[in-house]
Length: 392
Image 1 (cartoon, rainbow, N blue to C red):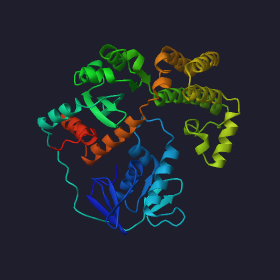
Image 2: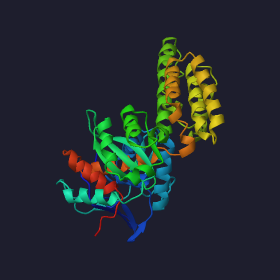
Image 3: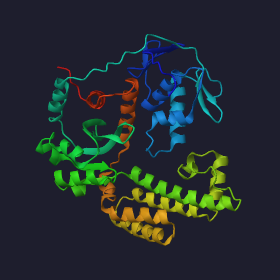
Image 4: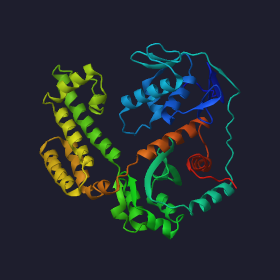
């Protein structure tokens, strides 16, 4: 990532941005700005006068494995940022659109001394205090997620409180033992109060919940965004195979359309939407796979289980008869896991809050220029994302 030096405060016009506190102020008064628009601003300010690509912004705002309508999300974040700055896309003073590339900050900036980030270990007293305070807090809906510590499949297991958007526990690796350590930090009353647990379809986590939570098997909710990702990956496998066949025959209709099959058509530009509509109606295998994906996700719009189960049985039969191997494989997976997919209708929980927490953890990691010590990283996550008032 460009812009290696990070100032504590950046000033432009009558605005100042405190990058450490994640605050935007105008004439000394704080301006309300949500997290993602602020992160867009921070990245632009680290590269003033230079264009920052949409791909760089995507990597900064969302982890690589996040399933999200990126174009709509980024456009909304930039629009909210411009609104906060009193800026306009037609006559920009600060944020300029670089056609077919990204954005550029064009205002004149000044800054203070670079921010010093402590790399020393957090004290055991802090972790003890955190654990003691946490044991007195009621726990309702949880989310299980993972966070990469560094490249090479080095992971942490995260347990997040969905109702308060905070991290409750950080365990090394992503094995069953990684999660087993969490349950002992809760009182019996807290364990019994757990109503739902959102997660992806990772068997070690499933085993840990089943063994340590009363009626845990009925409280697991497979995250619908992870399910959407499985379906999207299957569609892309169909597209890639069909594209090779078509290109060999001189037909390039599917070339460069990878992300079109993952986007929401309603968020497309009119010309792009018309072109995509033609593809959807073309009779291509990829179009059939896309229709299967969209129909499968309609399951989550149901309010009652009985019609939802009927819908899934009909969809599964269609997927099996589609003769599209990637869709058949994902259909078998969903059927095998279905009892913890339909629990969404009862609990209405997803891992969306975890993605927001992950983005904040990534920001903590970036501002510290990375962590060499796992314990320091774990303590930093709890300190910044634990959501507890530890003042005496």
